[in-house]
Length: 169
Image 1 (cartoon, rainbow, N blue to C red):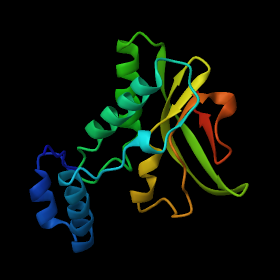
Image 2 (cartoon, rainbow, N blue to C red; image 1 turned 90 degrees about the vertical axis):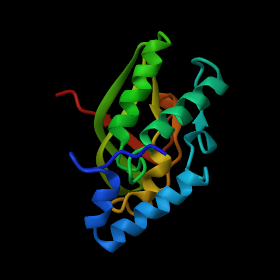
Image 3 (cartoon, one colour; image 1 turned 180 degrees about the vertical axis):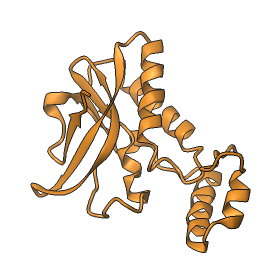
Image 4 (cartoon, rainbow, N blue to C red; image 1 turned 60 degrees about the vertical axis):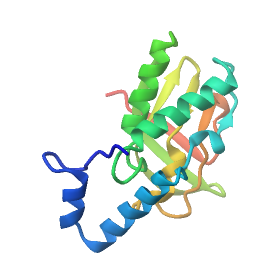
């Protein structure tokens, strides 16, 4: 299994040797899931309302990108920029006019804002792909009340549990 260390010039194993016990425990849990083939796949919870490509290809693209980004030692919960970039590159290769977007994600529960942060997603014309959010539960800074499913479809039909505001600067 390939693993990408969070630190430059040090392997994942060397990084874990000097990491606090709680960090090691988290990484070992992720490793075990990877070895057992139990990592989350965006297609499992995807809200798919797209008319681009085929449903099967959309699911395969999301899961393949997720597997690549999941090579990070700590999984993909903090890898939305890398996820969006790789997905955008794959879509451009398939001749879709995709672009990766960086901005603010605001999450809601029962109409109340519960969390906001810098996030990345992909746009193709009037559609948006917010594909990496199924792993947010693993990020320690994201409150456990944030529970959103990946979405691929028209911007105007995006689930009410999130707002994505693009940075134009």
